[in-house]
Structure formats: C-alpha cells, structure tokens
Length: 524
Image 1 (cartoon, rainbow, N blue to C red):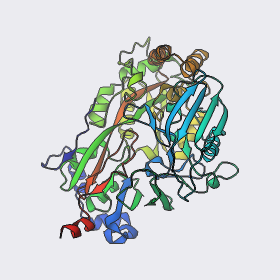
Image 2 (cartoon, one colour):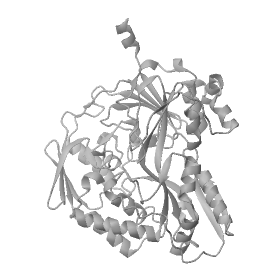
Image 3 (cartoon, rainbow, N blue to C red):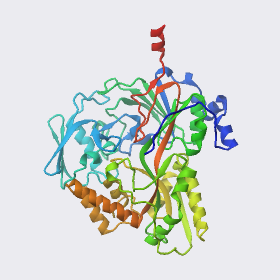
Image 4 (cartoon, helix red, strand yellow):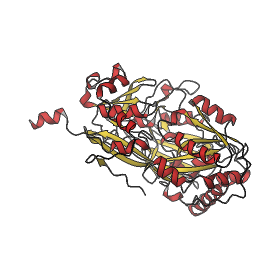
C-alpha cells in the first residue's frame, strides 16, 4: 500500500528537462497575463483572507442535464451514505439503516435538523422525490443502481424505505455518494433537468461561470462542523502548466483533484519553496479499453496477446512515475473485501493476430490530467514492432463519446472510479450485455454471474461469485486495467491544513490557514 506522505521543500533536485524547469519558474507577472485580467492578484478577490481558491483541471459545473448540477467535490450537495477509506458505506444524510425481508427492504433513518440551502427542513418525502428523479431515468442511473426498486416510501418525517424486487445485501454501498444525491425538488424541471443546485452541504452556490469558475459561500445553517473559509472558488484551469503557474504565483491556494498534478510535474514541485506536496491513493483505475466487437480484438487471443506485449510495470515506472501502481484487480484495491489479485500479468496468448490497422482513441480532456498520450504512443510503438499500423486519434468530449458509442475505435484509454465501493458497480457498467460501457464483450454467462453477485444474500457465496467473475475477467480481458491512481495535490504554505480524500474530494470543511488576521489581532 502506498503511503502518501507530505513533502515540504528542503532540497533542490529535478528530473525534468530544462524547458520544463524554465516554465515552472516563470515570473508572477507572466503568470498573471496567462490567467487573464480578471484573475491577476489577491486584491481581485474580496475577503481574500477568508477565501480558499482551488485550481482544478476541469469544469466542476456539470450542468442542468446532470445528476447533481455541480461536482461532488464542491460540497454543495450530500447523499444518503458515503464511503470510508476501505470503501464501506458510512453515515451521511442517513444516520443509520437496517434491512428486512432478507435484504429486500432497506430502511434509512435520516438525520434530524438538516436544512436545505433555502432553509427548508430535510424530510423523507423531499429525499424520496429527489431519489426518484435519479431512479426514473437511465441518464441519471447508468449503472442500474435502482433497477430493482419496486417502491420508495417516506415513512414519517425522517424514515426512507426502499422496497426491492430482489435481495441486495450491499444496498447501503450502492446508494452512496453520486447514486443518491439529495437535492430540493423545487429545482427539477418536468423532464428531470436541474435549474440549479439547492443541497444540504456546508457550501452553497453563489455563481457559476461555465469553463471558468464556481464561487461558493459557506452555509450558516449547515448541520455539521462549520468550515473556516467563508468562500471557496474553484478555477477551471484545463492546461496542466497553467495550474502550476497559478499555484506558484499565489493566484490559487491549492491544485487538487484527480489528475490535477501530472507525473512529470511532481519532482519539480518538491523543489519549490513555499509549496507543500501531498498524495492520496484514490478509487480511480485507468484502463485500456478493447473494442470487442471489431477485429482484431474481437478475438480473446488478440486481447491476451496485446496484454502480453504491453509492460505495465514500464508504463507505471517510466510514464506514471509514482502517480500509480500496477493493477492486479479489475478495480481499485481500496475495496479490500474484493481484492483477489488475478491480474498478475501472466497472459497466455494462443497466437499473434494478423497485423493490420489499429485506431487508438483519446479523450482530449484527459490529456492535461494524465499521461494518456505518452501511454498511447508507447502502445503504438509496441504494436509497430509487430507490423501493426497504429494511429492515435484525439477527440473533444462529444466526438469521443460518439465514436465510442458507434464503435469507431480499436483501443481507448479512460479512467473509472469505483463510486460505490462494490463490484457490481464495475461489472454492470463494463461487462453486462446492456452495460453502458460494454463494447461487445457481454454474454449470457457473465450476465448470470453479475445477477448472482448482486442478489446473493449470503456474504460467503457472494464473495465466491465475485472471485469467479474476477478470474473470468482476467481470462477474457474485455478491458485491461493498467494502473490504480495515486493522486498528487499541492498547496501553498498559507494553509495550515489541506487534504483530499479517496474520492478526490478536497476537505473543504477541515481546510485552515496558518494564521488569520483575527488571530493576529488577538495575539497583539
């Protein structure tokens, strides 16, 4: 297990080339010009002392057609349960729960004295309406968390009762985080779209500028611990170098998200005075996806062959460079109950496929967060040594997903986070015949195993089912897990504490500055 220890700058050492070193030490004036006139210094932000500014590599405004309007890292909305460091369900808006009828009925007891941002009290009926919005549309429930929901009942003011058609022993995990966001129904359009986000979290939305920033304010009526910072700003800095330049200039206090710091930036950040570098293993795994409905990878032997010539250790050591570890399971090993270690790299291809053309598809938005282009070029080189003509295609998000859906690719690179901490979330998504990311690899036998794992009420039998699924996965390789993500994040020494959890949520409530003006005044 990786130990993510803080690195405070005491020495000077760099493994990057001269060009990278010059970029990383650009003067603040040039940095201000790169970021634009509306973001050129601390004075541009009112109440700077009480404002935390975080640079991220994407836009946290998910928008009206999403499940939650804003990304979960904004701490604006909450769900019934969350996951602990071992990816087991723990209380959130639900303080406790129990099951009846052999795990067909689940009763969640909501916390008292929880209020939405408009000061409306949270009730079981409002939570019920919010979750039914998720359950009613495949757009919001792509992995089928609520496929077996028969009835959702508000029992009294604070008890929410799920009646399922079949047993589901891991249901508290299945409704964690993104699977059960509780938003005020007043924000729902008739078609399920969102007008805005009225949640119950410690921060509420003040302003969202698409592609630029999200401004949040502390919610005084929050039921839990109150944050120190009265305002949080998330800046969408999609260029990897710009993120670090902004941090160096003090334009942002932290750079924090999965993929916010690239592997090639880590060594230089260790040498920068005034910065603190830290890391955490997150529940994200990076995959090489095969198009199992298209030659040559329609054949399992071709997938096994490619896996045998790709040295994942070289990828992790040379290209990922401390930001990951070689995958030995289909998904994150943080889910300790479901680690079986079947992906040991001992592939046994029957024969090499006939050389031909291979199209490697990349999502443009991932290239400034992970070394996907380097990995794709490494795979391209490996294929070239065996006579294959491999072409790399970089597409913007809309075009990328369109080509994936239409099957216009041979290989693709993409991340996936085990948001529920249990195997069904992964297998139903990637392996089931009707899974949203099942690219020609589904079969009746696999579907049967997935259903058995989902509904088996015996913990021992369930474990055996998932052990078998893991073993079958390693034999059939519908996709190749490359590495599990270790995310680095960095922050300035203005902060006394700043952290990020296993779901790459920055710990906004716990974040604190070294000393505040109010504290200085008290000392004087």
